[in-house]
Length: 127
Image 1 (spheres, rainbow, N blue to C red):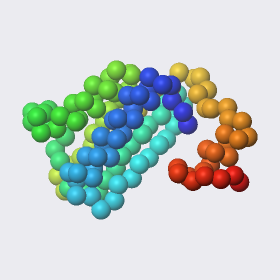
Image 2: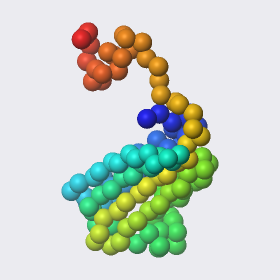
Image 3: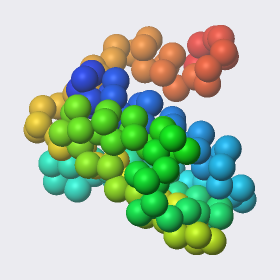
Image 4: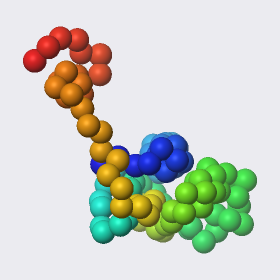
């Protein structure tokens, strides 16, 4: 699934920040990345089984959760919704839901490009 450039430019840092927060702060044993398309929306969610936090208190202590403020701002720029579900001791789920405009953004690759796209990064050679 491919997103329009403006959405991808804003969505990628949101997902990266959610993954980084789970790694740095959650003390999680497992982190899951989910991608789901439903109709004209796509949802990208990061879930962890870490220590969680009170999402209602993050705004009051925004200096401690500056990354969440930036994530919300990036989502707003592209008409997306950012939902943060968490509770102390219960893990966290951060979901970014983006509207799609109905256009097909998938790449049309030639045969050589398709083979290269299947190669893991840093692997040279032909199939």
